[in-house]
Length: 122
Image 1: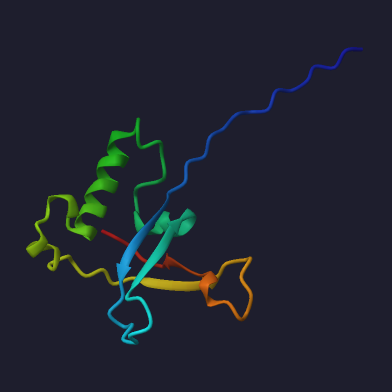
Image 2 (image 1 turned 90 degrees about the vertical axis):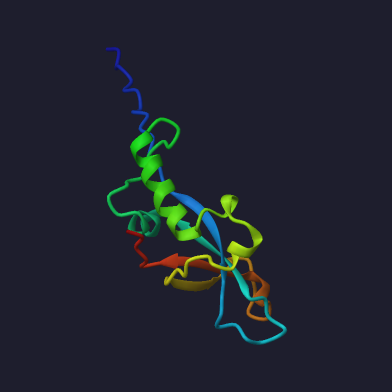
């Protein structure tokens, strides 16, 4: 008897994964940077873009346009801004969670990472 091998289904799942540079007004200590790089990925990124499930942005024009519009509103289209207008970047009220890099030690705070959670752009 010859058994037929079942070929694995090749299903591609798309996920959002990007980082944003945030200016943190709450950091007042002169020895700390006032900027955070926050990750946005997975389910939290899907929450950030309600109604825009992750997709191939090269081929899905509707999703790409929606993401561009929401990110553009969040960032104030920095490429089109002058230096004077750069100070007028819209405020983003978001929840940022800190966590340690898996390879960092308790004595090493350089392994601190940040991610945006429970935030929605509409």
